[in-house]
Each structure stands twice: as structure tokens, then as C-alpha cells.
Image 1 (tube, each protein chain N blue to C red):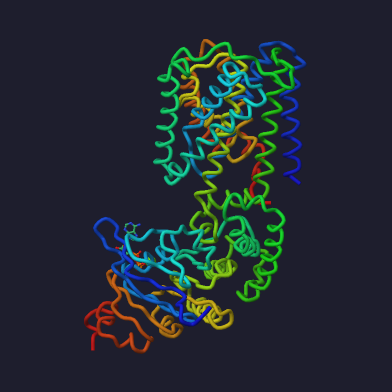
Image 2 (image 1 turned 120 degrees about the vertical axis):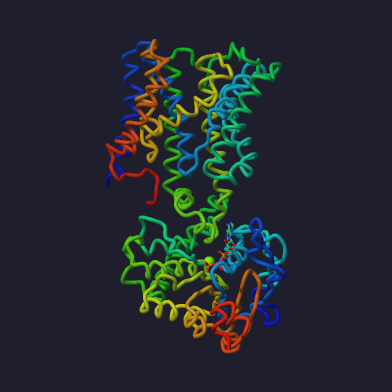
Length: 259
Length: 313
Ligand SMILES: Nc1ncnc2c1ncn2[C@@H]1O[C@H](COP(=O)(O)OP(=O)(O)OP(=O)(O)O)[C@@H](O)[C@H]1O
Ligand SMILES: [Mg+2]
């Protein structure tokens, strides 16, 4: 990966729902090796940006390129196979299978992403073996080994969210989209999640784009912050600069906090 | 363990279902058993769609396509029954595969309505295209089934064919769902956004299941046509699909054997209580209401608690 091609390049992205323009001409580049925070008040358009990037929604206009190749208009599964993973705002787990099996399954599902893949039995066996090995390593990385054999649905909420991140990691992404990973977590769990995200970036070299309402977490963790309001970028830069940006303070914290 | 027992039990049920009418050796019972089998196969096709959480009302239409294809191909083109039977599955499967990408983008009520309309279009085509499909008069003088030169004119021989077909279909579904397809299908029903984000093309898999269900419905159509040697459009309308759905609900739509059990219990009723046929739908309605209240998982849910065929291993 040459340093000149950004990991992700977004140009003039736009998406409306009826009369509401949820995302309005948003452009940004994500350089490789960054944790970037995408912040903004409720309804700013953050989840919509994620849905557009991940292919769950089609943009009305604009382009998205991942590592130099356009991905707008591709469906969610293709984008996932290209190397963008996401974890969801609500803890998302399948039912009735163990934590370990969740991670294993997440690791090989893309190998059977299309019906014809079911016919490649030989290479599938190799894929599953690799997914099982990766799952063992991930259980340690996620610090979920103690719960490996438990039914995932019985996990505490915080651990379910960590499992969600782990399933995303099992797909071996190069960019992770994390939508409010700390929402609903208690302070201890929030610290665990922050630490996990940091290790994802520094130990595994996976870029992270993070939506989060917990500003302290964002300021502490991110190399860069993009602030959205009403679908438009109002501030973009390192945390200490954005923190003091007037437009950001007004939109995000309310006018009375303005300096 | 419980899974192995349920398998043994299923095979035993299928064998009993084949052997008892053969031993009694009266045409009426053999006739009932054949009808059960044909209805069960159509009900399995409905089951496949329920498995991905979607109700398709076009299944009887696909059955009709299989029936007409098989009838016309053997009677007018003169191809052997074996080939016609296969094509009776392939043709509806291809049609479902062609419209699938359009229909399968919708979900819930929209999908139900679209498939309802599609099923009606199929039946209307049989009615209106008289030169090919014979209109409301249908098609008669359909040649009997024959396998490897052996004509299956005796009802008992046709029953053997029906049971073999039903068994093959059930076994194929069981094997397919016990493997990776089962994993994907389960994920489609439970958490599709998550599964897509892990790289699974949900639309392609839903189309595959839709196609497969049309294939199976088409097979039931071929058996139906060659057994009765006469078909007409009204046999493939909305109510036929609804009946197949009811077989699932009564038998237990969670289980692969559910549709068969439902057929075993219900398919003979209209034949046995001929003079009650007018009240059949009312009876079905009342039975359904009672079931939904008391036995939401159908009879198999009562017999085989917690057992789910073909879900994760
Ligand atoms: N599927 C949809 N249909 C209609 N309107 C939508 C849809 N999704 C989002 N919107 C609207 O688009 C705007 C942006 O919503 P979005 O969910 O992207 O905000 P957000 O920044 O993620 O907010 P939050 O912080 O509450 O999660 C909102 O006004 C929302 O009502
Ligand atoms: Mg949101």
C-alpha cells in the first residue's frame, strides 16, 4: 500500500430521505494508519455516512474509493469482502451458538459469500481451518477466552459489543467502521472498549473510523476528528484543534458554550 | 442424539406411509397417500421460503408451471417422462431465478403481495393463452408416468414414485441445511444486516432458495399432472398455496418434517369428508386459530420439543 493513495476517499457524498438531506456533499480522505472520529449531534448523519460507506445504502450522488478503487454502488457483502468491516450500533449477535463459533463463522462466511462458493468444497475446508485458528488468536486478543464456550446471547451487553467488534475483525479488514461501540456501556466496559480500539489500530494496524457520542473517549483515542452537523462537515482536524473550533462548539455543545 | 432419533423416526414414518397403503391394497387409500405426497412436496416448497422468513404466495403457480410443462412436453413433444419431470422442476426454477432479483428485494407484506400477484399472473396465463394451455378447459389425456420404460399405471406403482420423490426431496433439504447453506440461511432469517456485513450476498442466497422452492413446487406439479392425467388452471391458484401454508403451520413450520406431517393429517380430509368440502376453509380457519393459540410450533413442536432440523450443527 503506497502512502500516497488514501485508505478511503469520499467525494461530494449526498443522500436524502424524502425532504431530509441526511448527508450533504461530504468529502474527506482517510490516510492509512489512523483512528478517525466522526462526531456530531443526533441526526447529524453519522450512521447514514456509515451505511453509505458499507454499502447498506446507495448514495444519491458522489463517489467513494477504497484504496484507490471505487466502491460506491457495490452491495454490502462485496464491500465487506474488499476489506471494510463494520460493527453495529446495537450489539448484534446470532442466537444459540457460542462465542467461539460466532468468531469462527464470521471468519469464513465471506468464503461462502455467494451461492456458487458452496461448490468449492476443498478450498472451503482450508478456509474454515484458518478461521478456527484465527478465532483462537482473537479470543485472546479480545480477552473473551473465559467466555469462549458460552452461548453468545447470555453474555453481558459489554461483552456482546466486544464480540461484535471481534466478528468484524475476524473478516480481516483493513478498515473498521465502528458505530457507537461504547454506547450503553458502563465506565469499566467503556475503558475496555477504548483500549481494544487502540490495540486494533496499534497492534493490528487496522484503520478505524469511529462514531461516538462520548467526546472524552473520542478526544483521547482519535488522531483526527471530523465533525458533522445537519449532514455537512463543520470541522475537521486533530482533536485539540477541533475542540476549540467555534462552529463545532456551537453545533455540538450549544451556543452558550461558545468562547 | 435426539437428532439421530428424529432421523430414524422420519425414515420410519416415511416407510409406514408407503407400506401401509400398499398392504391394505385398496385404491382409495393408495389414492389418499398419493395426494398426501403431492401436497407434502408443495408444502416443502413453502417451507423453504418460510425458512428464510418469507411467505411466497406464488408456489402453487410454480406447481402449475411444472404441471403444464410436464404435461405438454410428454403429450405433445413426446419426450420421456423422466426428462419431463426434471424439466418440470428446472423451468419454474429458471423463471423464479429470473424474477427473483426483482421480487426478493422486497420483504414482508410487500413480498407477500408481489408473489400473490405473480401467482395470479401465472394462472391467468394458463387461462388466457388458450392455444397453448387450453384455457379453462385445461389439458387432458396426459400420458401416465413411466420410469425406464415401465408404465406406472397402477396407483400403487405411482405411490412408490411419489414416496421416492418426497424422500429424495426431504433428504436433499436435510443434507443441504445441515451444511454451510444451513448456516447462511439461518443467518439470513436471524440477522441479515450482520451477515451481509460479514460478506454474504443475501440477495443471491434468497434468490437461490426461491429458485429451489420453485423447483420443488414444479416437481409436485408434474406428479399431480401425470397422476390425474388432467389439469386445469384453478388447481394452481392462491388457495392451493394457502393450503400448503396451512400444512406447514399445522405440522410445524420449524421442522423439515412439518409439512409432511401436516399433509399426513390434513390432505386426506377433503377426500374422506367429501360432503363437508364446502366447510373445509372454515374448518381450516378454526383449526389454525386453535393451533396458533395452543401450539404455535405445530404438532412436531409438541412431539419434538427444541429440536430444529437442519439448523446449525
Ligand atoms: N432510513 C431512513 N429513512 C428516513 N430518514 C432517515 C433514515 N435514516 C436516517 N434518516 C434521517 O437522516 C438523518 C440522519 O440520521 P442518522 O441516523 O444518520 O444520524 P446520526 O448522526 O447517526 O444520529 P444518532 O447520533 O442519533 O445516531 C436524520 O434526520 C434521520 O431522521
Ligand atoms: Mg447513528
